Length: 160
Image (cartoon, rainbow, N blue to C red; front, side, top):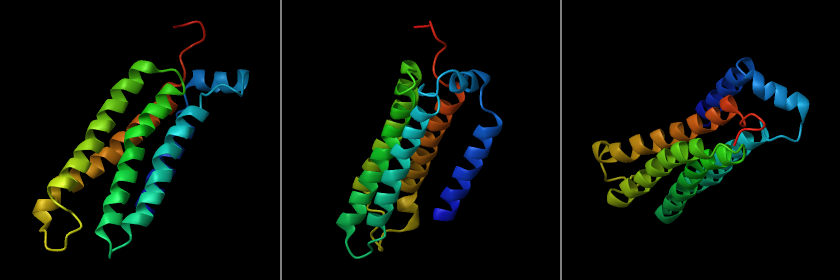
């Protein structure tokens, strides 16, 4: 799992470096205090730090309550990351769109976990399918919201 996440992060960083928008580069050279990169980076950290903390909790096989707490922590990070990424660069509408999608998928993940415990060894894989699909989709939805924050950058100066 960590190798997959590291690979996804490396690919995303290479894509961002090679396709950085011209206006974001101009903002960075004009004023390094602008949140062109710092806002989406804060969004990325909002997703990655809870992912690490939640992963530690999920690794505890003997205590299902800790595994559930790990899912709560991870999905909270997934739900908040697009909001942080877009609000910090003053992209209000994008924050609502990407944030609500990620929030809905994270809430669906928690709901699926409440309906069928994915950590119960007696539960078959077919009954875990909804949880796994929603969890994976929440991750990618959050990642798309963060990457979008890097690609669009802050609005041009003088625009509302």
